[in-house]
Length: 118
Image (cartoon, rainbow, N blue to C red; front, side, top):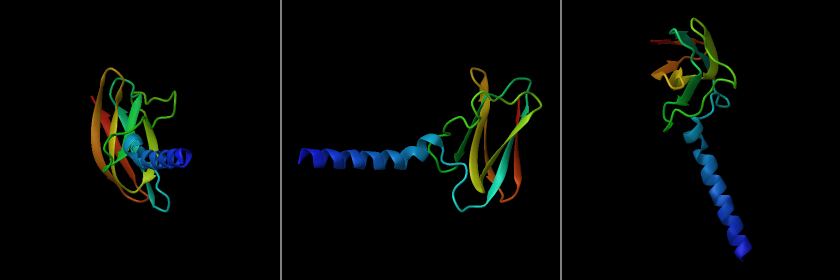
């Protein structure tokens, strides 16, 4: 009996955690079956942007860094992220220096630029 109850509790915990993962990560950038567009983060600062957080507008956090490991956006450079069309919150910055946040709507097939100035 204890094994059955313990197994049931573990299954329930896994279901709860998996349901909350989008709240932690910011959600998938591309949702299955949806049209996509592009967010282009442009660095118009004199420093390097080494963190870009992107989340669905209804997520409770900005989520995790979406730049590939070892990647940064140098001054005058940009980086593009393919996302599902819709509302997104973007937070870009440099560790220990500062950050800038913007809410944007990405149109299907379009490119939405987010220029970070400083």
